[in-house]
Amino acid sequence: MADFIKIYEENPNPREIAKVVNVLKRGGLIIYPTDTVYGLGCDINNIKALERVARIKGIKLEKANFSFICHDLSNLSDYVKQIDTSVFKLLKRNLPGAYTFILPGSKQLPNPFKKRKTVGIRIPENNIALDIVKGLGNPIISTSIHDEDEIIEYTTDPELILEKWDNLVDLVIDGGYGGNEPSTVIDLSDGEPVLVREGKGNPDIY
Image (tube, rainbow, N blue to C red; front, side, top):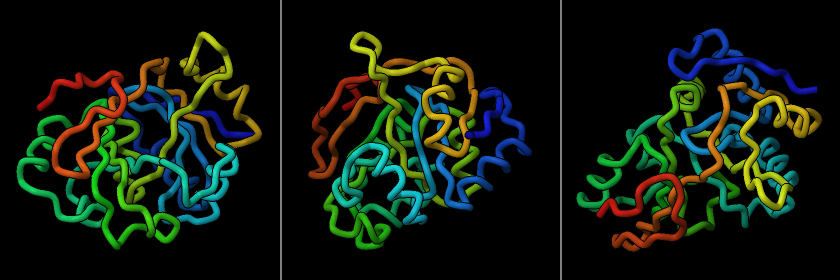
């Protein structure tokens, strides 16, 4: 049975954030709100938790295209190779925001991702997600919560998410109704922006 806690996006309660961080530090899986759709996440440094997420998604961990949810751009060099000034300025202009930027991965990537040439970086414009990552002290990996419904691609109601995921995760955050449009994905791994998926973020950013 997953814990279910209400956190208000405008002013997240530090005690509730601390509970979420505790779950992550113990290797737990959480479902949490972002500025787009609800995400499934865990501590980027916990191998067992990463493997659980991969099992749920039915993919091999090494081949998983998980995003790294970061608090800001200050630790970018831990996961991303050196990028040029124009790319950094583009990131700074558009983050936090509804984007996933694909960037060249560094040699410091956590073990399961060591062989990856690229990494997807997300800094969502959502105080709950940002406070969780800040409290944890490192990124969480994230993947969107999809719905089996043929018409509705993403579940937006936290109570319905709890019903479906109760036995699969350790904690579900009710951060209000989520969106049903994912992030815009832009590949910057070669320096020039390439639109991979148009979502909530305006793709005309360059």
